[in-house]
Length: 247
Image (cartoon, rainbow, N blue to C red):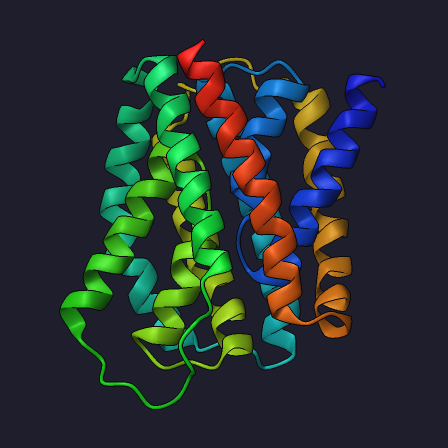
């Protein structure tokens, strides 16, 4: 299969994850860029930020149009991650490739475990500013360092800490992902190496189209079933990346 065809196929899967679940796309984008398209880990994490930012912004528009966003909550959550995202994005290029790969594998495994664990029932919750700030800062740092949107962290926090409904949490997480990705991408300007736009652009285009299909898929299948499918995929990716580091 040609690199262009691989980029289109991988982009479609990333878009499906973001559109259906509000997260998980960036965690799939980086290993696809590294192992399918031959990017270095540093270039892959930067390219993933471009892809995730473009896809999340597109999916965000659709959720906003349907009224599925808590704008004020999302803005505050994203604000807590701005500085960590910028600092982590600046320092990511200095990490050895093996460390970056191992850290990414750990995050992929964490994402899978989050998806397999049922979310607490949504409803009125006591908002604890310290927890919200910590969650927002941690999400920003992960986005800046590894090039992932972090929706798998944002959605549970928005549901369990802030008491948003799942549908609203998914839409709001896209606002947070878009903001963090743009900040981290700004910090990485000039440090991402050769991004090979001839592959990144079609990858992002396929992801954007996939995000629309992901929203339709989410309406047909239960959220729990979708999460299990992507969780198994992420666990496989994490195991492969850990093995790559060890060997």
